[in-house]
Length: 283
Figure (cartoon, rainbow, N blue to C red):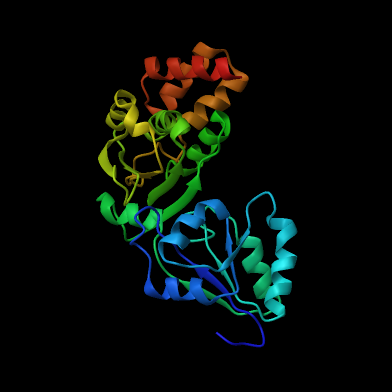
């Protein structure tokens, strides 16, 4: 690994089972000058397991902007760096974008080492179409922003992949059911490669009921996958029900907005009424 310039290695690490690491990744982590990790305490478990004694530095969302220049200077001086995340492939809903971009801007070599990725691992076992998919990462934390994002994806024909946190999974599933419809097929992939790995598929309504009924399914690392919208599933012109209701509620009394939304989209009035009351309550 001798070079006048250092090399930035992008190294995928296991998402759970420590056996899911490549021989090349182990060799690289042993021989670089620095390992840059999101949480140096977390990565110590992996490094100790494989007898890796390389020095570590932290790079996370709170210090990434300030730390990039220092790391670029190390690389320019000839030090090689391995960038890892807490689990899986760096930069996939994890820090590192600024570092990689800065390295490429000054023409430093950037070498990716492939390996585990929770999104792809979940997709491969989901039973949903894999020929074309859309990775959306984490949905917004607030209800209004999350629904707005989902509204924009309601007609997306590709399989959708989301990461979700345990304390928001029920809210996310409820919004998915409301906006995508109760019969849309979905999969919850939880704790992948770990002791309590679960991959459960059903329609969104049944999945929400199942997760609500079992607190154990509200724990751990989660990937949500949702089938793409079937052809012709949306109203003429592709107008999503939630969007129509929101727009009409801004201008009309609740009952009138519900009535017109039902006429435009074909959605049942009682369901629209419940949703309209909820929207008004959040406003």
